[in-house]
Image 1: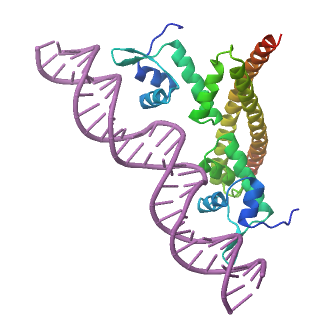
Image 2: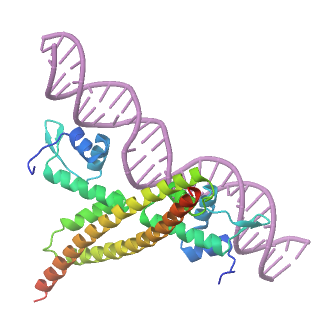
Image 3: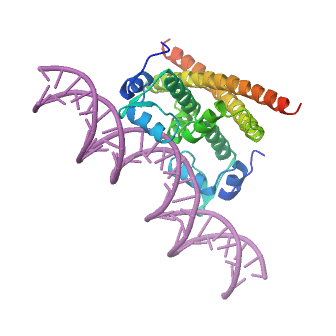
Length: 127
Length: 127
DNA sequence: CTTTATCTTTACGTTAACGTCAATATATTT
DNA sequence: AAATATATTGACGTTAACGTAAAGATAAAG
């Protein structure tokens, strides 16, 4: 539901990370949950942001890179200089990701070759 | 050329890494160059192996993961138990890579959307 | 055959991304 | 309200992946 609220441990459980991780990301300015008293409350947007962060990690980005990446999303589109920086940043990331995709495709085809060889070798043993 | 030999610094330069990195990978048993006296000499295969390692890094793998990965290539295909472990390892990596590819594709399309918005915003400013 | 430049080894330093207490503060249960 | 559980805030610890500086060995240049 769009309006669910989570405590730190709840969100952590849902996302499969530790509460410490959430706090750590907060000190790194990657997320910024509301407080009720001094307790952290995460809303839907916080959760969505966290999912973006985790996706970034799966891709192999550092937290710093992920922060830059997130900043791309909420950059102010009224400043021309900002816009140009944004454009360049986006362009760099795009070509990096394209390279990464190529690397993965190559690795995948090699692994599939190994997989084939493996299953054939195992068939041999069974006959 | 298939028979070129490199010193540590030469290969490091070619690959765009430091000589320290080469030595470090050696202590981690990722590569194992010949010695002439106590000097390291890298041949074509060492270089190819290094390129595999660097590709692994671009994909976001840790050196430990890369080692496991390399071990997949030169596993002994005569041992049935070995083969089964190999098969499982390969299978895991494959699904992980497929997930990574999905993550990248999503990120790419989002970035392209930002790119479009950026260029449109810049056009506006120029008219 | 010295001098000079490279390479090697050893060892300590560094950064990223958290983990793991310990001491409080705040809820929650009884 | 007292006891118990849970969350927060330092603060120190840890692992990965090298960087960097020091001291000795060896090769190349003069």
